[in-house]
Image (cartoon, rainbow, N blue to C red):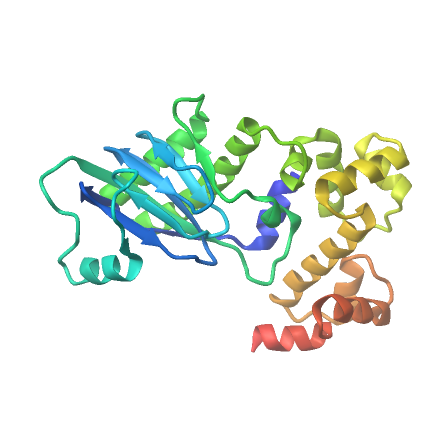
Length: 302
């Protein structure tokens, strides 16, 4: 399994697709700060998206914009359109009297959000930019385009299994957005650059696949095909922590994942993530999480 897939599998990505929205100018909505990662795709008309402190984005038909950290943003038909609050828009929409239904140019928008498990803290999530804009004027990833088209079809023509299909398609869309961004962006450092760097990415893959292995720095450097000193320097520069520090945090993440789904003995879980001593595992887990593995499991499974 590649490095990104391993992270997303542990992050337990949850996705929601909104109904397709039809607006006529002038229109605008102010989306408040949210813990979830919103995405928008323009299907028809014109659209501007503004995140405070960032350059306004004019979306072309087919463009996809993702706001990974749920930053406050304004989405509107014109760059200077007045915006109503999300609460105002939602109240009107659910009352059956939606706003922005005039006779001017129509805008069609498809959107939704992604959500990571709150307890998952990983350099990948932290390294995502404030805004990701996948522009159709550039070479758009064919699979990304096809996933978006299939989503639009399922939203427009609800059929048997549409809800399940949409959920899977949004999961795919998120991965394709990240893949397209990594390919298009001029990355210099950070975890996304680590995914792009074949050497460090291969080392991350090895850690993810075998957290139970008694890794040494020399062995990890071999997985990257680098000298120990260069490997340590490049890993820390890109990932933001040392190789052994990352290994420890990954083991804790995997142990939390196991604790949340089954009732294996703590000693068995410790062994699965690389610790032969249950006592040592308990001490490390408590130092990282703030409670013992047993206490964490009781809270999660209660």
